[in-house]
Length: 229
Image 1 (spheres, rainbow, N blue to C red):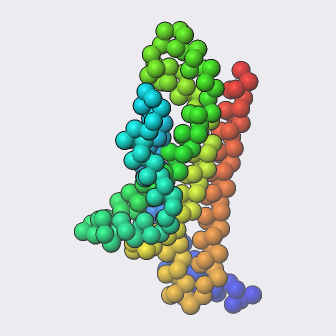
Image 2 (image 1 turned 90 degrees about the horizontal axis):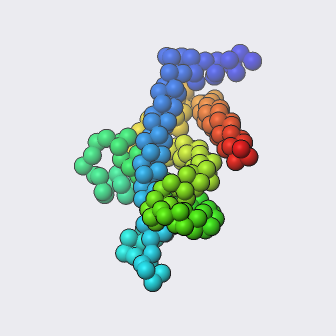
Image 3 (image 1 turned 30 degrees about the vertical axis):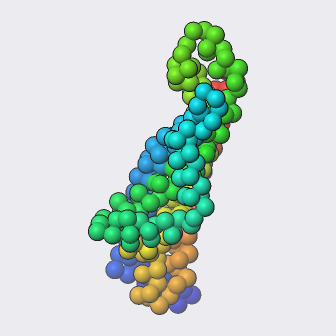
């Protein structure tokens, strides 16, 4: 029991190491938040481009480019994308947070694009026809009728994407960022004891993800209630 307490103290209390874990958590959430915002912007643009069609129903240049982007990003590992961003595209940058946020934002954007595209396509075509019959233009119909309904469809899966994003940022140690996972590894190497640092990091991740999941569940219930009114 004394050995157990000693290992716990060295992993979390000695030298105020617990502060390192929370500092690492802060960096993890910072990267995830910036990436989520960027991913939402990129994903929205890519989804709208992907839905673009010419008058005869063929894909536009924008639709083709968006499709290639989505295929390439979804078809390659996020860790490889991060390394390409760090060592090739932004090799002169010393801002690891910026590099990681860009990499994860671009990665997330591909998944968000498909979520938004599916949400828009899920809206009944009759809604569009009703809007046009009321004299609204195509753009007005989309903006005032289709898009608000699509938002309800996409909010829960986008929330899940953000949760996944928080967990995926555990690889930012590859670009020398001291996130929660990297801090746990550093403490483990200093104390020669891996159990408490790694399990501690896992517990912190679990609590954060659980809180986010609960929040997402509350949002989903409110959206369902609004559908019944």
